[in-house]
Structures are given as C-alpha cells and as structure tokens.
Length: 259
Image (cartoon, rainbow, N blue to C red; front, side):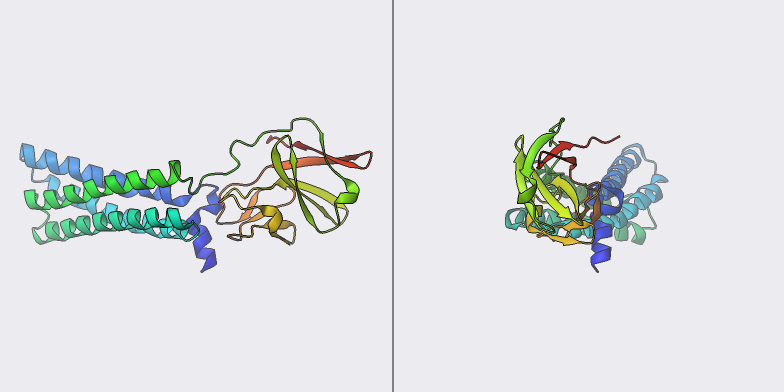
C-alpha cells in the first residue's frame, strides 16, 4: 500500500503527480464545452460523438487525479486537510455531473443536446472552483512545494561545529549563515544535509538513520546522505547537501552546487 502511495505522490519523477494529472480532465472537459457549443450553435450534430469522447476521457482522468490527490492529502495538517476535503468534494461533484452527461449522451446515441450541455457546463463551473481551491492549497498553504527551494550558501567553507561536538552516529542541527544544517558522523565520515524536509518542513535532525539515509520523523521520506536526493517519498525533491572538511578540529561546510 505504501509503495502505491509513493507512486501516486510522484517521488519517482521528482515532481508531484497530482497537478500533472489534473491537466487531463481540465483539458478534456474544456474541449467538451467548446465542441458542444460549436455543434449546438452551428448545427453540426456530427460533433456529438467527439464531445462525448472528450467528456469520457475527462472522467477517467479525474479519477486518476483524485487518487493522486488523496495520496498527497493524507500527509497534510488540519488546516490544509479541511481545504483539501472541500476541494475533493467539489471536484467529485464535477466528475459526477460529467459522468451523468456522458450517460445522457449515450442514451441519445451521442447526439448533441442542450440538456446534456447544461449538465456538463455545471460540472465545468464546479471544476473551475475546485481548481481555485487547489491553487489556494499550493500557493497559500504551501502543500507539496519544495521547502528548500530558496536555500543558498555558504558558497565558501564556513565553520559549523567542533569535531568533538559531533559524536558517532548522532545527528546535530546547526545554523551556518542562517541555513539550518544537520551534521552526522557515520563510520568516520562526516555528512551534512539541509535540516528541513523538502516535503513538509519537518526537522530531519529528529529523524532516524536508515542505512545511508535520513528518514523524516513526520512522513517517513528518506534522503541519501551522499547527495541529499530523495530515496523514498512522499517527498518529491531532495534536500541541500554540503561538502565537509576538517580544519583545526573544526568541521567546515559549503553548499555543493549541482553540476
């Protein structure tokens, strides 16, 4: 079950899957409305089958998007959960209306009609409302955004901690040029990663070491010690990784920039 959830989160492509899938019903249902209008206003009944196919594709796409959205919704806090539940209810209502419209078209041998169009139009207005709510969750509440998108520096080696303050196998959180960093000595090697989980902002220093990864304490995302990449979701982005060196018994770090 967890494997399926991670697939639906989009970890495997490094991008949330839900917003990609929502383009399918939005595009298909927009085409449905346009083709219906052209056929009804200009008397082209042959367009009935085309708009019906588009409406059906939209319903299938909406179900896939709903599954991915549910996987994301499971990992958010109470304020976002409430908005997400309303968002889901609105979009589910839109999907049901389009499904009804498809069934009505089927009963009319795919012929155009103002009744089927009005039902689809009501669904379309609802899905626009659902899109607004989804945008609010992302842009106002920060759901499924990379919490480290604007992390920067240090670009040169800066002192982080004295070596005696870094015990084997224990994580320590420090601030270097106002950047939160978690340091870890493991088998004699010192690793430094961004201390904030990219998925929901959890403190990674409160997590666990699993093999050569840090597991997030909130939603169990895992990040590789060597390069900060996400190994397991729901996180879809890695965390910053820092190069380390020891100078005069001090651990110094600098941000490792992508090639």
